[in-house]
Image: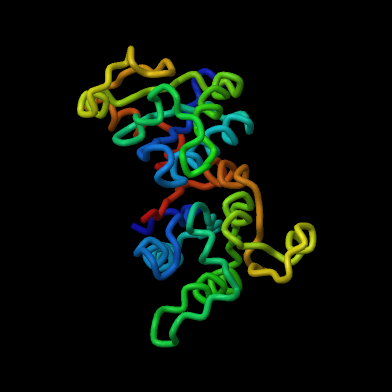
Length: 135
Length: 123
């Protein structure tokens, strides 16, 4: 019997290329969708915020994590939310915040969105499942 | 469902202060959840119990201490604070020696606590 589709949220707390967590999270996200469920929200927290950097230039023969998240957003409409408090202190900053803080460049852009921790709490309330990937 | 019977969000804190930002960022989630009207249970487990030692002010490296944050829990109506008894004993601590009131729980009770929670955040 086909199980009813569930609404999933994924929390990523591991940095890219440092820990398995980020790689596993992306593979899990794809598997959730392949199994017929809905992945609505990905929330990046702790060192997971580094996954959102638009300046990362990984070797071409390694998994392209950032492109993977972007593809999920464009193909399946899932939100890529980045905790603003965790991001700003780690140098992940969008154009608006860069201007506000007088920084010479920005390292984060759509489809990644800076947001508050309240969205993580809301994700726990709004989804059937919240699965966390930590180092 | 009334607020009293709604399952709480469980925030598990497993890291000591100062060495990493896990404890601080975990406490931030607890405070924000409470500010958003969620009932929150805090569980100090493993090295996380070190956070309850008295005097966790700013460290030698200048990071903010977690002491002031723990003092704010009551203000956010976070009153269900539990600490793993086994983790305390392994570190030579007793509930009386802690700087904050936390209810000691036995490891056997943890599966039911986790299963009965609305969401689990593990830091």
